[in-house]
Image (cartoon, rainbow, N blue to C red; front, side, top):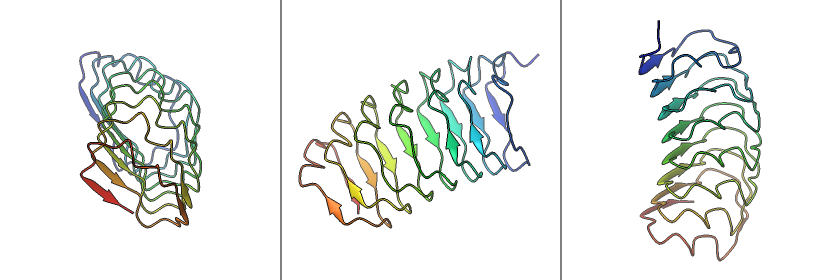
Length: 178
């Protein structure tokens, strides 16, 4: 049985989809690497039962769709890696239960815009990388509830509008790449 498994590396395989709650019985899992596969979609409750998961790596897949409740049960998640996929939009409430999230990597996708409330509940967020997307404007409310944000990467986008109040609440910012 894999109930006590803490790390699972499925990197660089040919996985195209995952069954719903496929990892449910691995309740002690802390690190899950699904990077460099062929995944296209992340379904609702895909990671159900993963109450101890701290690091989730989904980089370098073909993900173009993430369902609204895909990450709903990942309360302890600290690192979410979604870079190098084909994500063009993000549901505004998709990260709302990730209260312990510290690092969010969504660079090198096809994002064109992000709703103002997308990062709303992420008070522990330290680093966000949105580089190499197609984002054309930054809303002043993006990071209003992210008091611990230190590293923000939004370079290599198509920025034509940045609200003057956008960074006013970022008291701990130490690196800003535009």
